[in-house]
Length: 140
Image (cartoon, rainbow, N blue to C red; front, top):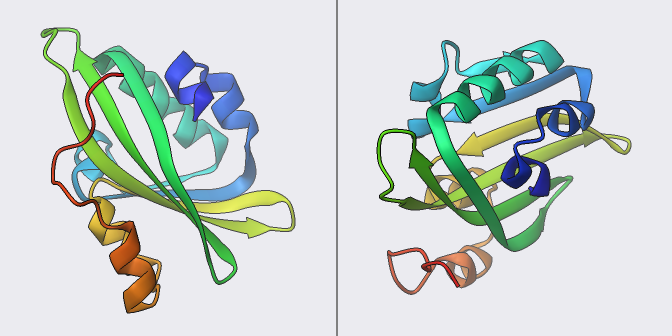
């Protein structure tokens, strides 16, 4: 997530393969022309648009959880638009699938709880991951 924080599009693109699908779920889907990005060029275009829209982006992972053969990453993110200095803070989740060591699919959820549900964790595992408050932490 450091590449996202740094605005380093080429590093983001280098992490995916030519057949990788990057699905945008929930509010993230509203930021793209298509909800499923296919391959490096679609991902590059999405992040170019992202960094044109947002003046700052900060993503901080809070949990990494094995979910069968996938990886659930929970994080909070904070962005500011070029029109406003007021930060927007939200919880998010991503589910990564792999083909060997390469990322084959990413599902990026605007809503952390939707990502937890999609990961199909046990009730106890899911409950442990839910924040005790609805507000993400502020800058530290």
